Image 1 (cartoon, rainbow, N blue to C red):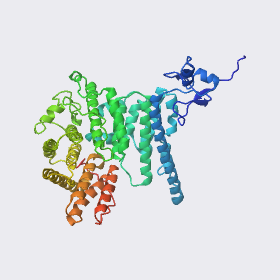
Image 2 (image 1 turned 60 degrees about the horizontal axis):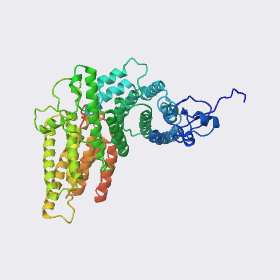
Image 3 (image 1 turned 90 degrees about the vertical axis):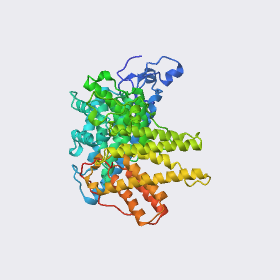
Image 4 (image 1 turned 90 degrees about the horizontal axis):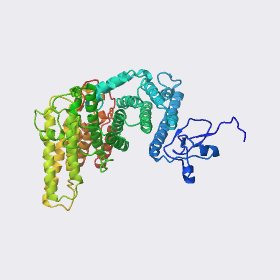
Length: 576
């Protein structure tokens, strides 16, 4: 047969089709698959495994399919994210057109939603990356797009990172500031794609919920773009510390935004990746002479603790309660996380979880805010183990609960003593400790009808304990409201919003003075604090809605409407 100049038809798969199905296309580069295609496997013949279509299927112009089940879930999740992103884009376009019709022309440089959306990656643009991933192009493409997103409307990567390390890094020190800036200012023309993703996640974390609907939808699009890029790079690149840090920041943002189920899934992926990478929780003394090696070891240790702490924080949410934890409980030989001010110190006393807990009441023990939060997580673990152990007899269970109650009160007293005269030092650890206290005592249902006199006393004791701790939270909320102008909203961690919500639930459920003036005054202290918090973390808006619904179910008392929020410009970073 005479030869012709006609090029063979190469089969290329679009993102919209099945993850393993190829369709005819005019051109495309070739690479190798890990296994034979379905057609060659069925006919039991040799397959050259060429991508996107093997030679046999190309010659016969038939569909070539590779069974790559490992990538199905990642592609499916990417597809779902893309659909969500397209919905937001369409919604923004409609609103933008409506605004233009109502108010005339809008300046394209300042107010055009379309121009802002043009700076975001179209989810469909990742198609070529997934099909034919030229690694060098991935790094440069992602770096350029991330820079374009962050620097829109005069923002800068430097300013976003400075805000993050000044505020958020103080309560979640999982990224070495020195190592981060070394990479940011490195000699490479384009940083690695996973580092660019981390930079975008840092920019995401400093976003504050906006009252304007258009801005809120732009922030939603920023989140979806970040998550889309995260899923995409997971499928393309091996796991790294930067990608793991990015996943933790995304899980934290999702949790603080009220996306608890999404956060549960993301933190679970981070946990499995940390197991795969075998993150060390005990940095070796042999690296003390090398500053960068020491920082990398401490960064890995703190990152593991950050994943564990966020896992527990997500698991205490009502939507997630009862589901398995992603990270196993720490053991007594695990080192406590390092504090921000101690990262440069490659010598000195090393505290393990075991010896720090045994000496938790010693005032001479030097444990910072992140270490205290790790200890609080251990108390939370103990509470969960007791509550999930249904084989205990009643008297044994009550004895264990009373011992736990003493330990929690002792640890809470220690935190209060250490934070005396300051704000924001132990916000995370206090919130986790109070969450343990609520979980421990709310299991003792005082409304059951089949209790003995002894059980009634136990229930009454728990009810008094819950009212006592709720009174403490009400006083803290009132002090926060009074001194609100002295706080910095960016620096406030999201954990305490949950505690105010739990205190409000207890206040509504157990008060014997329902609807009285004092009851309403205390309730409004909690509602106002939650209203303030919703201007930093969106999950507080969900909490406020649930509080109001619970109030309307038990009383017709009128609730205050809060308006005219003015962001404070103080320097305080937290409630306690």
